[in-house]
Amino acid sequence: MPDSAGTPVAPTSPHRPRLAELFVAFALVSLYSFGGALPWSRRMIVEEKRWMTPEQFNENFALAQFLPGPNTINFAVVFGSRFGGAAGAGAALIGLMGPPLIIITVLAVLYARYGELEPLGRILSGVSAAAAGLLIAVVAKMAAPLFTQRWGWAVAVAVFAFVGVAIMRWPLPYVFVALAPVSVALAWFVPERQ
Image 1 (cartoon, rainbow, N blue to C red):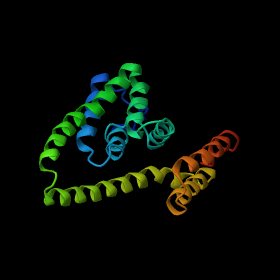
Image 2: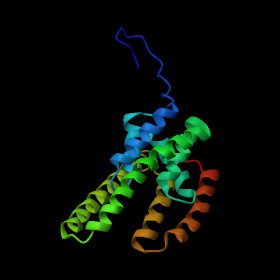
Image 3: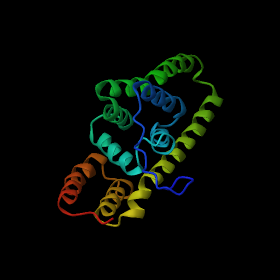
């Protein structure tokens, strides 16, 4: 990329976040993310901070999905440890879990007292619709690099997983157990077209 004088400038390496930045970033994600933290995590990490490329985000999120436990929490730990080791994993995890823990404790007390009110039910229905829309949007963003850059076996695996879970309604663990070894074998032995 040339500068204003036309001289080529080497691209800079991505900024390596400090522990405080990890904590603040994931605390903000947890505060913004009603209905799920994945859309906000991706937006912050890939689009705003540019700490990862979309492909790197997808690869790290795939690892987080492979691990037992909640995907976004796993992702925070994987991401934090990538940039700050155990301390980075702790900072990202505390940032992601701390604010919601405080908020949900307060809301639980309020819900126990006022949970029977009809307007509250309507509000929660609206929030769940917005959360579903956010999830659909982030899935589309995550799938874009897969479907626009590569038309090899990875797309076939994604389509088989979708058909198995969404259309055939097979249990997700069975689809995962069936497709994970196939996907790993294909990644190992078959080069992906770029």
